[in-house]
Image (cartoon, rainbow, N blue to C red; front, side, top):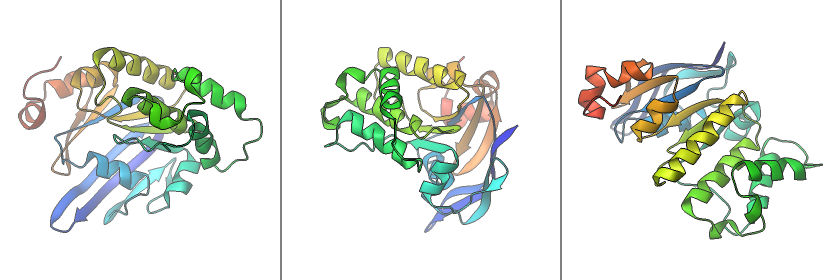
Length: 239
């Protein structure tokens, strides 16, 4: 079943065509990769899907409902969450309070949410630091806190923009384990990443953007051997 459809979406910033009639289809229960050179439109596409930017043309459909141009809070409440490369934590609030914000973001009363918050913090390995101000966390921990807060929104679709950027090899492996576990819980994932070994090892399907256009899509093996993708981005066969 199609969870998300991006239909001929375009976005221009002045003289720069950031997206040019990009079309994608995301199906439930899979892990997708979105790759391409810097400036190819990956983050712009995420922002359009999340309602942070209005497209100049095209439509975004989530579960067959047109959500194009809806404000971000409504899109979150419909079941889409996103994290970006630059973490958006509240530095002077505690780790626990940051996740509580996520629960509030889904438009529900807090009620008996303590167990939910603690379970999420345990899942991302931050339960022991729940009383610390978020500003005291390392980069890897801040990314995991961002992830916990996104999961607190109870999303069906989770967009992750360079979640593994800046992490060391051990932290990357740990992140991949968490993402696989999230997928097992029935949450569909779309990952923007430049760490190709990670993308190729975890994704079921990959889309490739270049200068705002989709130039290829397919299984990891197909993308890694696609001559056009190798020329504009990979530089060599990855797997």
